[in-house]
Length: 202
Image (cartoon, rainbow, N blue to C red):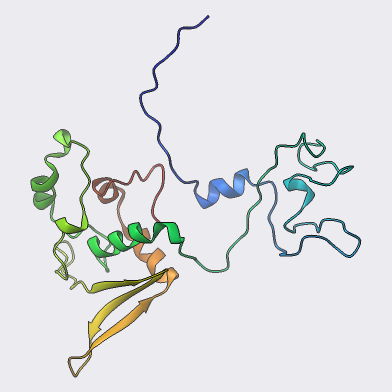
């Protein structure tokens, strides 16, 4: 009998869209469940590839009956990006600490080293919003940064000033936000406590 092994760590992450599509047993395209005869719609929410709950039917993925089939997940292709309400705090942090133009962290390498130490001696501490000055100029591309406002549940906006000196909020769409998050380099994500190989923010 093999000796028990000690688990060093458990790492949680998110599946990428590509991984979800590969693992999915069915693309769902209809919001309907059953037709007029009471049979599940193909590619609907009760598609037989996802599993069965009706006695007498068999799952089209594993061929098991109700009670034996464990269930299988499908996927829905979204026409546009959607913000997951559970990640709004992380999105807000990323928008506030990375450049709106180049996506880099709003700190120079020297500032990062001063805060969290040299890369080879890093204790694993992550940078926070407090480590980055508000409304500053990007040290990498020189772009002036704008204040980011957040309104629950999922509304983000950049604050600018018009010709009369009045503050104006320009709403960021989920597509705008995803485009910005795609620019953030993997190395900068690591400094922010995000492991890009497990889950990139976009």
